[in-house]
Length: 270
Ligand code: DGL
Image (cartoon, rainbow, N blue to C red; front, side, top):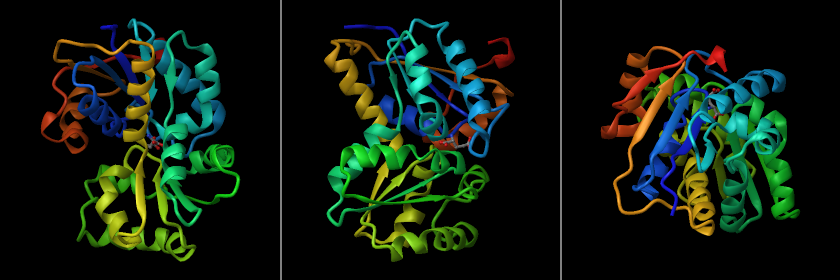
């Protein structure tokens, strides 16, 4: 048993979808969440900038005596995982491997899709992981840069003509390619599950990368005998921009359990 917290970080609020899954799966765990809202979005940035930001985010989290770190951000998981793993004292869970494992198990046709940010898609990390999991798979990767700003504007519900039009425009080529499994490779996309599912149809399985990373984290802690027990866990939230904005917008990602304890930090100090 290990009662130390799990660290989670993201470019902003989107990673709360992963934090929510961690809390659901492991209610006894304490969670320290950092959202780099002052520098969001990460999704169109260069690898050098991403690495610099990710190292600062990790340095901030390393102030806490963490038993594991979950990189909720798809863009950082695809571009910086190896370096962060090498440099971190705590074990690091990214979103790519767990999601690829699940998608490779689910597909029947052998044709799988990935939707994510531009930086995630151009990293080629998913293609590499799929090749390793099963070299026979046909992988169709697609950047959907308009999804994140629309979700942040609350335009994520079925019936919203803007998000539905854009989703149809983006996803029709994937549907036509005959994929039967689609990895939602970005923190914000679980909020589009109904819209994306509506375009792809019920025969396409959707893989939520945050949920898979949460499961992988639980497996890792269980293997190490490091799961917390006999208590109700709590979450503390840190942000690099206004705490009040983080608190208000967190409801979109966390539902009724919106963030209560939110503290501002100066990420340039790390
Ligand atoms: N968190 C990012 C990701 O999952 C999406 C938002 C951004 O571009 O920073 O890739």
